[in-house]
Amino acid sequence: MRILVINCGSSSIKYQVIDALNEHCLLKETIEKVGEEVTIDKALEQVVAAVTDQTIDAVGHRVVHGGDEFSDATLIDDDVVNRIEKWTSLAPLHNPFNLQGIAVARKLFPNIPHVAVFDTAFHARMPRRASTYAIDKQLAEQHKIKRYGFHGTSHNYVAHKAAAFLQRPLAELRIISLHLGNGASTCAVEMGHSTETSMGMTPLEGLVMGTRAGDLDAGVVLHLQREANLGVDEVDQLLNRNSGLKGLSGIGNDLRDIEAAAAEGDDNARAAIASFAHRVRKYIGAYASTMGGVDAIILTGGIGENSKTMRRRIMQRFGFLGITLDEDLNHDAEVSHEQPVICISEPHSRVKVLVVKTNEELMIAKQTLAVAHKDVEVENPGPIPIAVSARHIHLDKDTFAELFGEDAELEHYKDLSQPGQFAATQKLNLVGPRNRIDGVRILGPLRSKNQVEVSRTDEFVLGVDAPVRDSGRVKDSAPMTLEGPKGTVHLEEGLICARRHIHMHTDDAKRFGVKHNDEVEVAIVGGPRDLVFGDVLIRVSPGYALEMHIDTDEANAAELSKNSDGQLVYTDVLGANAQLKIKHT
Figure 1 (tube, one colour):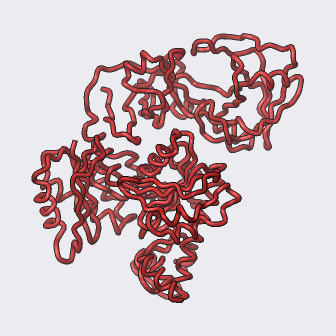
Figure 2 (cartoon, rainbow, N blue to C red; figure 1 turned 30 degrees about the vertical axis):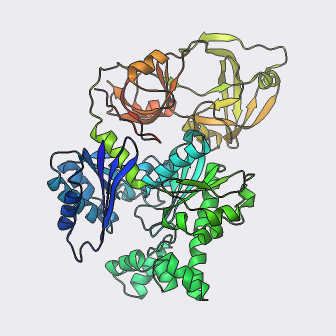
Figure 3 (cartoon, rainbow, N blue to C red; figure 1 turned 180 degrees about the vertical axis):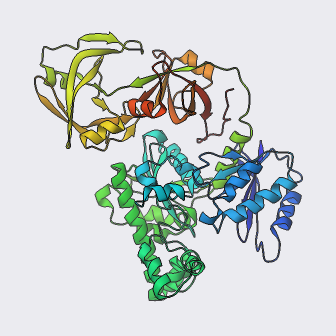
């Protein structure tokens, strides 16, 4: 399956032909000085001529801004093009050229699928607290003002590569990804999903970049307009093209030139380097805090992969987070296609620091393959019953004894839908910093770990911030106090909002064409609202009965009736190994 990947920019066109199934690059070129010595049309005609001996199955296009309309890679048609055009004003340095490339390529390759892969898509499901700006809500909704994030294709790719290198499931890791180049951004990848990122509504927010200012007091813009009489276009030019490393150093946007000038004593160059590193370090500390810790830090992009001095500046003095850089490993680290991941932290460092060679083109090719060939009709596997999971508690043997007495036993109240599980007669009170919730039922049998599952509304009532987790993964979750008839127990961890998931028997998994730990989308069947739940985890066991579990908040928002069903939409297989995304019809 040969995918032509096109990244059409303002002054160059990068393209690759990739065997997406085998992750092998067959052809790779860059056409420079587009718009100066050659038009986009002529440049793409050169691409066609270069790939005449290749059988191209689909074309994947990088598109920077998809706004809130595109949360996945999308098959391109005229309607999609029109929808992309609406977001051009928020990515003026990128989207117009992306669209030009799409228009010309569709004419030159008219008989094969074209797919748009969005930088914003990986961040599309960031929690509301991370994506919302603190401005008038009605105005924000009217003008689509929110934080969208960028570099998602790169952050997604390197997170998967890091997890494979560490030989740990991505869904168990807290990763801080640092994409450092002329454009630069950070991303908190928590349990496989973007939960924070430094770029915002446009690629201008966040880190110090090659020519972009990054974080800036909005009052500066107002001051420049009032006092320096700068118009909107002049402020745009200043912040997007004449700031960042270029503005601070007075030299340009290439870090190599700035480092050379700094070595010769240029104070402006030194200040630019220090500001760049300081901003990145600040984000590392912030993301470690919001995730409640960090397991790995990734450095990628042109600067992250190649500047050992900048890596050292950024990663120093993080001993309080459990990070110890190995100076020799950092000095010698040179990532390549043959060795795309190198660890530069010391063996005893609790947090691993990894240099990872990004490959956005490969990720685009894999997503293009999945979308271009997803409409494979298969036999309808049938509906999935949906159960609403109310707040409940799982206890281990010792904690149960503390709360109910040494001689107490868990008493059966009624069976649950999952074989062997039951609701007990015993209940406990949850005591939080703000309030309490009394009479929360215990589920049996007793487990090896304590776990309290609540909804978002419950956590607000209690005054806690519970992470969304897979059931059973309680390490570094939120604390909670349990009050019982014989005593009170304070759990240092164990309070979670359970992630939506589907229990499946092994026979069901075969019938639906999924496997354990896949992520799927589920459409509501016959409900009052046209709704699709994303990021639904598949859990497979011979002891499970087919059933999807969502919490009470989600059920209320979806207006689900007691006996609602769902329909599997597709399996999300855009992980480390390319597979097809199968749509069930």
